[in-house]
Image: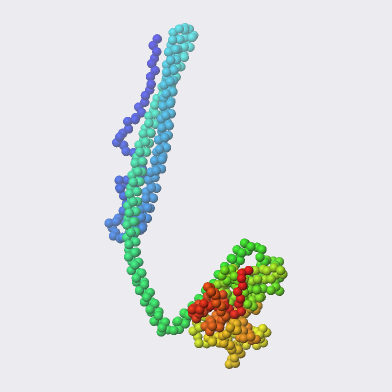
Length: 531
C-alpha cells in the first residue's frame, strides 16, 4: 500500500534586503558631515548673521556661552544616547523572539516525526484488519493526515515569523551600530571643540594676566606719586589754614573719646567673661569685685550669691599684687570701695575682708589698664608753664569742708599750692613728708578725688572735675617730686623695683634717675609678703 509523503511548506522570507536602501535613523535636520560648530550668530528678530557680514570683535565669554547653548540644543535634538538605548532594548527583544521561534521549530519537527510513525502504524494495522475495524483505521488515517496538514501550516507560519524576527534583529543591530558610530563621532567633535575652547580661554587669560600685571605696576607708581603730591598739598594748605588743623584736632579728640568708651566696654565685657569662667570653676566664693579694670573706675566689694553674710561693718584691706606673688599694702585703703590710681596700672588688686574669724580674699580679673589718652594728656600738660586744675575742697584735716567754692590746684616743678582767687590756702615744696595719692574715702566721687597732706597736721581731700585730671595731677606731682629727689627711696643690692608708679610715670622718672640704683615707691606704701 502506498503511503502518501508529507511535505513542508516553506515561505519566502524575503531575507535578501536591498543593499542600496539607506536607513533613516536620526533626524533629518542634523548636519553630521560638518566637523565643527556653526559660525553664524542669531541677531535681532531671530535673524541669522554670517561672520562675513560683520567685523565686530565678539568677547570670548559670549562665544563660550553661545557654543555651550548650541551644544545643549544639539544634544536635546539628537538624543543619540536615548535612541541607542531603545535600539538595544529592541535588539534584546528580537533575540528573545528568535530563540522562542527556534524552540517552536524543534517542537514542530518532533511532532512531524511522531505523526509519520503513527501513519505507518495505522497503515500496517489497516492491512491486518477487515470489516468495521478497517473503516475505523481509515478514519484514523484521515484524521492523522488532517493533523499533519495543520502542523505543516503552523510550521509555515513559524518560518515566516522567524524570517520577520531575523529581519527585525538585523535592522535593529544595524541601527544600533549606526547610532553608536554617530554618538562617538559627535562626542569626538564635542571634545575637540571643548579642547579648542579651553586653549583659547587659557590664551586669553594669560594675555589678560600679563596686561594686568603690567598695568598694575604703572598704576601703583602713579598712585604713589599722587599720594605724595596730595600729602604735600595738604601740608601746605594746613600751614595757611590753622583753623583746619584745630578742626582735625577736635575730630581726633572725639575719636580718642570714642576709642576710650569702646575700650571701657571691651574691658567690661572681658571682666564679665572672666567672672563667668571663675563662677563656673569655683562656686564657693561669696563675694566679688564690681567695677571696671581701667584707671578712672571704682571697685566695690559686693556679695555674689544670695544669702551672703553682711560685710558692711567688717574691716578690709586692699593690696597690690606685685611680681613673684608678693603683696604690697595700700596705705589707708581700708574700706569696701577703692578707686585705682596710677600706681595700680599693670598690677592686680586684692581685697582682704576679715569676716569673724575667717579671711575672705577677692581679686580683680586682670591687671589695671591705662586710661585711653592719659599719657598724651600728661605730656601736653608738661609743655605748659603753669599746670592748674579746678578743684573743690571736700575735707580738711579729716573734717567736712563747709565751702563748696571752686579752688585752683597748682602743680609746679618745685612746689604744690592751693589757692582761691588771689589768696593762697596752702603752699608746700616737694619733700619726703608730703603725701599725694588717691582718695581712700568711700562714695562715688573717689575716682575723681585725691588726698594731699602738705605737712603733719594739715591735709586736704580735693575733688577734681574729671578722673583724668585727678590721675594726671598725681602723675605730674610724682614726676616733679622724683626730679627733686623728694620721693622716699630704698637701695637694693641686685634688684630695683618701682611698685608705686605707672608705666608712664616710670618712664618719666627714669629720665631723671636712670643712672641711680633707686626704688621709687608711693608715700606711705609698704611691701608685704604674699599671703
